[in-house]
Image (cartoon, rainbow, N blue to C red; front, side):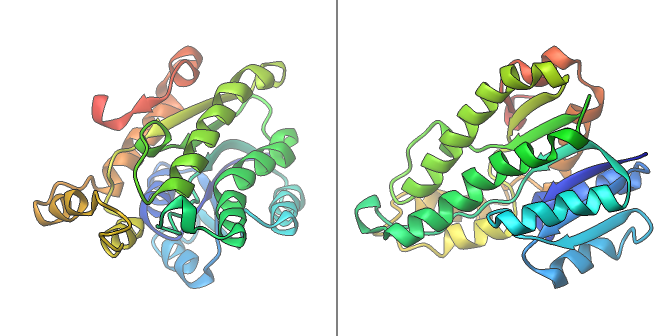
Length: 242
């Protein structure tokens, strides 16, 4: 069976840069996302290596379609990178509707958990990586949904690294820092009364201090392919402390 790396949220930002990194190293890559046009743009650079599948990680049917894609094409899953995530809604927790809360958690928490669950049979001896955030460990006013979802994802990583040992599957987590992605455009568009930390993120952009996705992709590739099992799983890695 051919080995493949699966990257969710592969249409932009870190996911796009990582797809190009893996393809450049000769790996088959399957990228997923909700926007077909963005996935196609990612594929253009390495059309012979990058496969695309429009898929919403929050939808059970789409997760099953991803599983079926691997099965039909006889791929063995070597690396699974949970990169897809949303920031919105950026507003006080007291203002969030039940529908907004559920939609957010379905993408950021349920998606990675249940995609891992359904893909474990294809991942024997493979590695899983969660793209975490400083927001998992620090409460930002206005980011209540995002902070909560990333904290939950961190705990899922902590729990699964023990539960998946019986399958010889290793799981890691990375905090990439403030990266120059489309999510940062949304951060800077937030209402200052909802997000008091707004000015800091505006200044990071103005001072050219945002981390480039390609730099993070290089680090992720190293994490997945060149670290020992203990290094990969022991604790959440921090790009800024590499």
